[in-house]
Length: 356
Image (cartoon, rainbow, N blue to C red; front, top):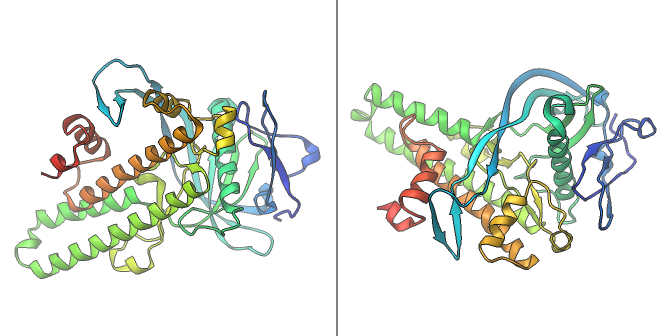
């Protein structure tokens, strides 16, 4: 069952590992070695679980991450707001995530559907997998412990545990099986099918209603995603991997738009931007971000904090562009990377020129 005693873990980032101390039983303990100062935060016991707390169902799917391996100044670059955007070397990361359906098996929440996110053990994913799992749990724990209450536009973490093989399992309340990327893909395929059978030539009224429903759905999707991002920023957290695949939807049926609840997920690369953290230099997965901040002239902790928030908002702008185009186009006409290249390389961040 879900335990009721608190678990404590430090907030530094030089080494984030799941402890296997048998004295902690099913507790999750994150030991993070610091060279400057050690702070410990006690986290709500609802996140401390054992493997017996869940029943695992079918595999939903798997996905990986992309690594930025170079921030060199080589290649094409251009000025923006006193800084520069650089072409970067991007490669596939070694961490492969698996997702399973499941449900809570014990306690008051027994039967509640969950989605289980599995990070590979160190043997398969290296130390990076443990760091990502620890950072994601840390981020959710802090956001969910806010005195302002929980945000419905963030996926809710209900527990986590480590298996004997070293895999890190995080259990989230089931907020939907689809993502904004799934919605855009399905919708663009419908567009292609409609054009292929020439539906628009004989049913213009229905086409207009479809566009109105689609516009309403997309606007509500964006409102939910931005609300979740604003909540994170209000609590000094950056998302840093915001995109169509990181927005979970409880429905992709446009007629059900009034009941749509978008939720942000994938906080493995989230960044703590509390001023004290920036002053101490306790950075995880954010070295590149702060290098770009310094290159843009941000030197003080407050300037770096503002740069980080602006960087998240830039990603939100790319998400807006994606949803403004892809669901209204034929399948395969445009994607995230092509839109980003158009905006950054062709139009050099000139939004008016891109509209033309």
